[in-house]
Amino acid sequence: MRSTSFLPGFLLLSALACTHSTHTQPAPPSMDPAERGRALAKRVIIADGHVDVPYRLHEKLGPNGEPSEDISLRTAGGDFDHPRAMEGGFDVAFMSIYIPADLQTKPGASKALADSLIDMMEKIARQSPGKFSMAHSVEEARRNTQEGKVSFALGIENGSAIEDSLQNVAHFHQRGVRYITLTHSRDNQLSDASFNTGKRTWNGLSPFGKQVVAEMNRVGIMVDVSHLSDDAIRQAVESSQVPVIASHSSCRHFTPGFERNISDELIRALAAKGGVVMINFGSAFLTQAANAYELEVRKAVMAFTQERGLARDSAEVHAFAETYLREHPAPLARVEDVADHIDHVVKLVGIDHVGLGSDFDGVGPTLPIGLKDVSQYPNLFRVLIERGYSEADIEKIASGNVFRVWRKVESHAAGR
Image (spheres, rainbow, N blue to C red):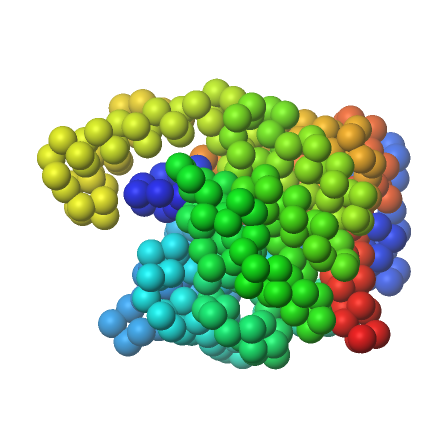
């Protein structure tokens, strides 16, 4: 997700899945849910639709231009590193190539940043070949898992990276990008954004945005509708010839009025096209209390900024925001709330249309109790087991559903 307005980013809040080992057996039913959750996390492939590691590292580059954190080792900060991924049974991270909306007014800057972040993730994989590997297909992701490696799949967050050139869609496919979130926190050249206030620029997708969706279908890139306005989501689903995903969105049913989450109507529309809603773990996406709290934080920081005529990213504004959060603790969601959102999608449209899109390293301290980093996926599996989900169901949620869409998009492109 990254920051949605002026706040520092850390403040805002199937059968095709395979086993880790061809000889690992299902957990005995006699095991308690926690033990079964841990065992299942080690056995099924866990594919998370949205992990913000690239920009986390980009924000902390050392004087030599290299990341100051080594995610192949345990890190003091952040939500992802290799040791914790191993502890949680985490296998496939769709690494978010996040492009800030501010770059949309600087021609060429969005594409340049996207290419540099892809370069960085490829270099990390090359430097730790026994731990990480790029994944450009479901087959590569499965093979990496069999070899005990964590896969880096790539998704661009903000279609501004395409700039004004349709050829850049094929360029990014060649670079390994397998989904593109059409916009982010502001309307761009492709689409209206859910967070954008006031008059919509396009009343959905722009004419160029519709061309980009068609080109993504042609080359084999999944269309991601997280961050889009309702009309834009509706038009993206209608215009795409293949299923689409919402890589890191939750259910608006629990947060009325919060357009960044997906409405029941649009969940049904995505599912009717074969798509998948991948649940965001940020507390503001999960509960009304946390969502209202985030709004109050924004209002307080905005008032402070305007009263003093400060720049939105000034040290004074950051300090005020940190103090405000310390003095007004956030009402955090719990792992059970994530399960509630999964339940809701399943009740609406069935088990084949829900997945995981945590927003780890993007929603910072707002992560729910019990899902604070990638080591804690087994906690979610425990809750799902307690609620009666079968291991086959959980496999679909963990990776099978998004893998199905990924393969469908690939096969459509290959058949053209």
